[in-house]
Image (tube, rainbow, N blue to C red; front, side, top):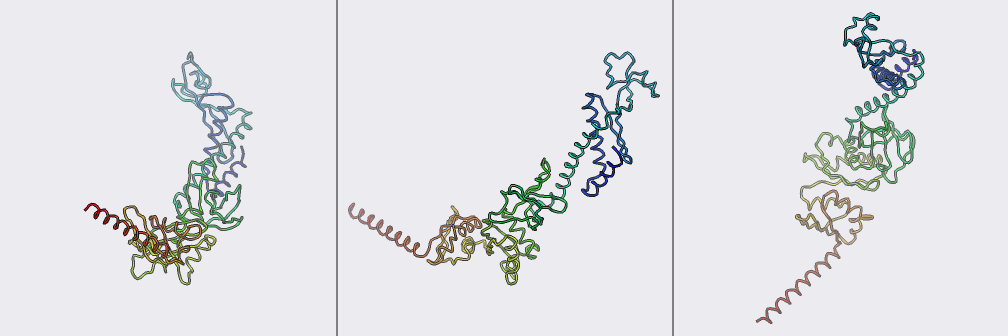
Length: 374
């Protein structure tokens, strides 16, 4: 222990923002543990480090007992005569500290101190990281990709690092060292044993869509335009339902921006993911029809008890309404909260004719039964 240690502590404080007093306490705690472990004592000790020179000392803390005390333990007790010889009052029960730093203790103490100090530094960094990001939970932040390990992406956020795990990445997106990336802060874990993974971020979570619109559209931040619902198939398509509290403000136009500039910036940030901006309506029929954009809807029939909607579209619009691999219909159902059954006009007509025929046959059978009975 020397002045080099003090210089290192000062450097750590400046570079990592960890209070030097925290580090001094860690070292003193390390020295106590090193002394007890090496000498096998259960006695109480106090460690002290000179904050100017880095010189340390360990003091044995013992209780003054009578000179004929039968349960005497040299690590716990001090005879009254010995206490007086050291210049103390020597009253029974007094606590006396004496220097107990062995000459051979330096190397052991340094090794133990280093291990404990490193752990305390990690603990302090985790706390700093938690304090920094606890207020950013469920928000979007911008980071720079610093490394990629086993598919997991680590981003630098200021002086901290966060993890974009494989499970929270968007299929099809590619990440390169040095790329700037907007991510959604999904989880901040102050108890994590691995500092690198204590902040978990996501590109896959649908809430990132909402946060990106909040950043790009002032009317949303002002509360004039509200995002009522979001549904998403990450990397493929998203639908966003918006509503305006001011009749003079077009919610869809506000989100699209002049010549599509606002939504285009969001699409670019999401690496080309398509976004449909849907006008929200409290009327389920209107909302369901809007949600199937860009398909034209002829009719919507709803069963409010079962929350099932039957939708009829033109013959040439069926594939558009359903979407590739059913994505458009699936997103519309998630957005509205309704189960949606889509038919084209020809299918609906066939169903209607079949139903009418069945009703006619039922009516004929019922009439025949009445005549027979008569």
